[in-house]
Image (cartoon, rainbow, N blue to C red; front, side, top):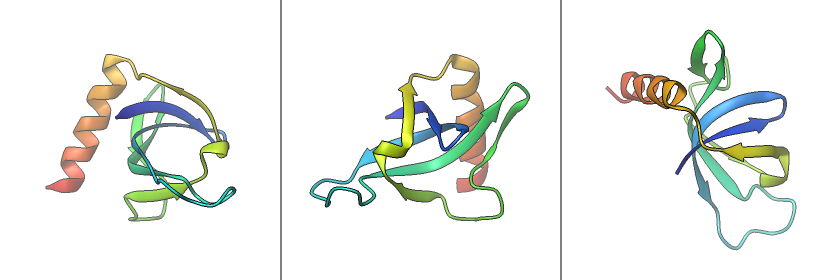
Length: 84
């Protein structure tokens, strides 16, 4: 599922997948193809890395919601460029 989320002070759009059966405090979800978004557009996240799947703790995510159509389109455009 693709969501807009606030992670460590950054607004991201990413596919979120739960990692079942992990110990408390360990990374328990994966952000796939995360993109940082702002009013000007979207860029791959994190900067300076080519990793496209990030294991994170859900406790570090402070908000999860559905992105609007504009940011959903930006996300798909960036993802398509990366997977070509």
